[in-house]
Image (tube, rainbow, N blue to C red; front, side, top):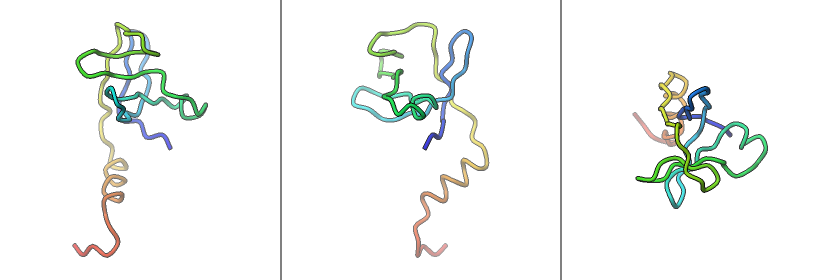
Length: 86
């Protein structure tokens, strides 16, 4: 299931992506990657920047998406355990 958390921003386009931890940093999963069941094309590496298929790219940045109430409700629901009494 695709739950975008950030925007991958180029000079002309903003693409919603979901950050997924990887051995070298984070993979940036797009809706297209999910639908085609392929490996993420983009990744962000600690102190090295954004890469596309192991090639460093310039002119891209990552911006967090603002949280919506439904995102907050979903996060709370996923951390609530049955039997918890609040």
